[in-house]
Image 1: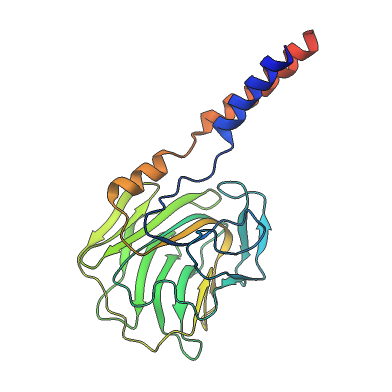
Image 2: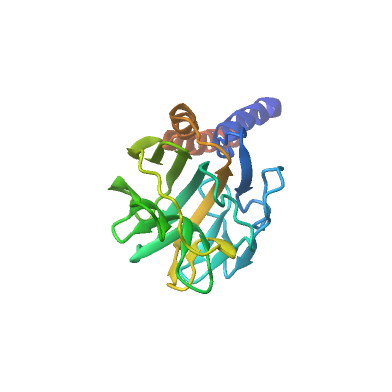
Length: 250
């Protein structure tokens, strides 16, 4: 009978405790907090981050996450992960407590001014923006907003011709007006904070991934579709109850 209990527990746990589905082709840096650090977990030599006022939260999108208070950041030094590349992707699971005028997710900054390269952020209504400042064009903006108090997956992709924003696997914005950065050379890259204007993230970020290519629409949608549904967690709780009930009867 104990063997049956063990098998049942194993099946239930395997259906619930899962890492985020991550595409590894082209992955250059990945941060998930599960080792209690901001070290790169990609295995591809991405820069290790320094936690600057960021704490580790047990309530990430998958296992642990990075908790920001609006004044904290993950500092990646002068390692601009994307730099001047024209083909890349950024993926992040985002759970914001609130939205400021700008709520930074990632950017590469010049600390002597407000010049900002490869800037992914939320506006005051929770819409997703990607921008270069100063630039030769305008920002790409999602049609819809994310909600506070819950995780959403945000993906930005750019292939040299077309740029796209996705929220929870759904294409939100697309155009061919890729901006060219025209500012000073950035000297620092940060997750969760924009230098000199104090636009910080308040909430939890998790499963932050950078790619040296544009993820396809199919890859974005399949990654999000592989996330366990809430019903899985209900099944987990029911399974635990059933195990306890039958053990008690025995």
